[in-house]
Image (cartoon, rainbow, N blue to C red; front, side, top):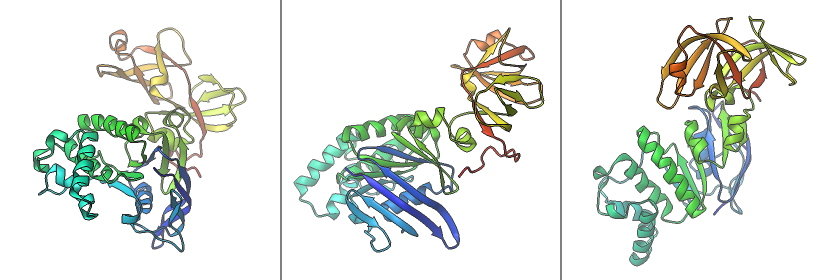
Length: 357
C-alpha cells in the first residue's frame, strides 16, 4: 500500500504551463479521481506520478520514498506501481495467462510462483475460465480486465488508471465501474484514476479532484462536490445544472428580467447567477417560488425531462417523476419549487465555465 504526497508540483511544456502548482496527499488505500475536461492536466499529473514525465518543479513522494524532485528521479519500473491504459495494451499473440504473467516473467520469478500469482490475479478479475483464450476471443470488458490483472499481479502499492473505460460501451462501463471499485476495496490498494466522466468519479471515488486549465477547482468527497460545488465550473461539469441570471440584495434574490423573487440569506450582492440542480426542482399547479410555462416534456422511463420557460424567456430544466408526463402538458402554466440552490457572483461575461482561482 502507499500514501502519495505531491508538493508544489508544476509542469510546463516549453512556455506553456499545463499544470499549475499542485499540492495534495492521497492516503493509503484511498480511491482518488482526477476529474476534468480533455487537456486540463489530469493525465499529465498521472504520468508524473508514474514517472513517464518529470515535473518542472516540485516533489512527489510515494510511501516514504521521494520519486521525483529537483535532485531525484526514480524510473517507472522502480516505483512499485501498476498501470492500466485507455487502450487495453494487451499482447494480441499471448493468451490471458501469459498476458497477466508477463511482468513476473520479466522479473524471472520461479514458474511455480508465477503460476500461483497469476491464478490469484485471474480469480480477482474474474478471468479464471478464460486463461487459454487470446485477446481476439475476448470482449472489450474482458480485455480490460486482462490489463487490470496484469497491473495487479505484481502486488503494487499503487494502481494508476488512465481513462480505462472510455473505449467500452455504456453497459460494460457500468459493470466495470462496480468491478474496479470492488477489487480496490478487496485489496485495499491506493488508486489514482483519471477520467472526464463525472459518473465514474461519483460512483467509485473516496476523493475527487476537479481540474480545469491546469488549476485545481475543488477537492472533496463526491457528495460534497455535487451538493456544494465551489464555483460555476464545478457546478456545470459535475451533474446537470440550471443557471439563472439574478440580482442579489439583502434577504432577497430577484430573477433577472422578472418581478419574481426568492428568499436569500447569503453574502453575494449585485449581479448574480442562481444555480439549481434540475432534480431539486418540483413542478406545482397552484403555488411555488417561480412561475413559468411548460415548454416541452420528454418521457424517459424513470423520469420526465421537462423545460419550463420563465417570463424572461429563460428555459429551466426540470427532472420530474415519470407520472409528470401524464399530469402536465406543453403550454400549461406551472410553478417551480426547489429544495436547494447555489448563488455565484456574476462577472458579466455569461461564462459558466470560467476559472475561479
